Each structure stands twice: as structure tokens, then as C-alpha cells.
Image 1 (cartoon, rainbow, N blue to C red):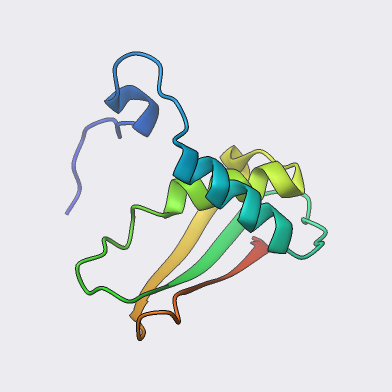
Image 2 (image 1 turned 45 degrees about the vertical axis):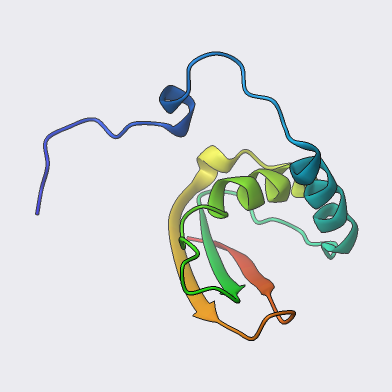
Length: 106
């Protein structure tokens, strides 16, 4: 199905200034601390992420932008270079939640 309409950016969804919550600031700090050192390839990128949720009600798309923003902060790349993404949601037992990712050149 092809829709002739401009995609709406998350930045256009909210009115006024948004502020990071304490929960997000803590999450960002924790994720930055455990991310491994990686060299990001030059050029266009593909982001592959698997989110392990303990709730079937979790939306697969909600954690993408915050996690992607943390990745670009850690690895110093502009996420406008991401041209492709593969996102997967899996259900795990409570306490076994995870994020698995890779960044590839396309």
C-alpha cells in the first residue's frame, strides 16, 4: 500500500519543549556505561535491534528512538545516516529483559 503523504517526525508530534525524565536520564547513564566500544562504519547505516520484553503489551516501536539517541551519543554518529532498520520484539520472563543490537554499513 502506497500513501502519498509526508511522514511525520516525532519532533513534530509534540508542542513545546520536552524534558528528559529522571528515569530516562538514569537509563541513558546506565546504557552508556554498558555499551561496548565500537567503530561505526562510514556511509549509510542499517540498525538491527532486538528488544526482549517481559510484557506482551509492550509496543515494539516505543524504545527505538531513545535507544537510537543513546547510540548516536556514545558512538558519535548522526542517526540521519540510518537508512534501514530491522526491529524485533521477543517476550522473555520478567527480570530477563534485554536489548541486542548491531550497526552495519549498507
